[in-house]
Image (tube, rainbow, N blue to C red; front, side, top):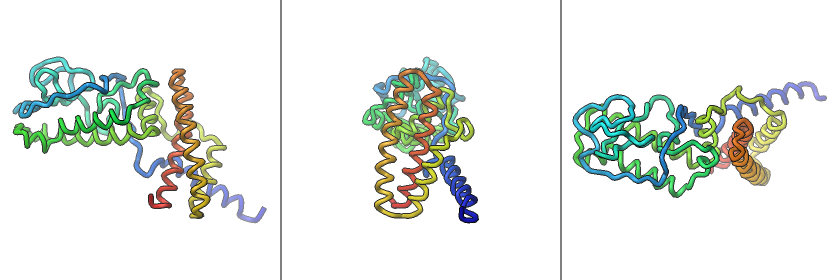
Length: 265
């Protein structure tokens, strides 16, 4: 062996492992769904101008409307009786994207298969409902606390939509909702995956267009195959196996992000 070669390989392998642990270029949302509940994604909101807030400052998250006392539907941000926005979610840290959009997390197999067009419609619907500028333009009298909450909720809805429209990020969010997060140290690093990451990093660093195109095609195929394996694990209610598959998906997503950065896509 050429002197120093072993040390160089070890250093590069370490770099590849750190790359995998960093994850995507856009940091993955790490939601904390404490309760698996929600409502059908087809539920529509009825917006009543000027009645979404009252002059009173809303209390913290609850199960009844702070305006009229009507019981709130699980996961809904709007009272079905008086149409007021209610602070149901503790919007500190990183709330669960499923919970933010009022979507069920159980059964996990059904929760994972999201209709992207319906998801987009739900996102736009909720943004229209709660955006503070729209509320102010509609004549609603908002207290500072209500303005702050609606702004934070609007941002949370945007982030939830970003996460759930990506199947890999959606897989991570769903597993976390069921107590199987993809965090560093939760699963041992597979030596074969580490070697693939090392080789992929070499290809990305080389900048060769043909090699990177080949790597992109291979990586897309691996991603699609593991998404099917992930679905199968959920269907079998095997969340531990789903967690292992999701770890591989994180590897493939990291490679995809590395290629995109190199190619300025």
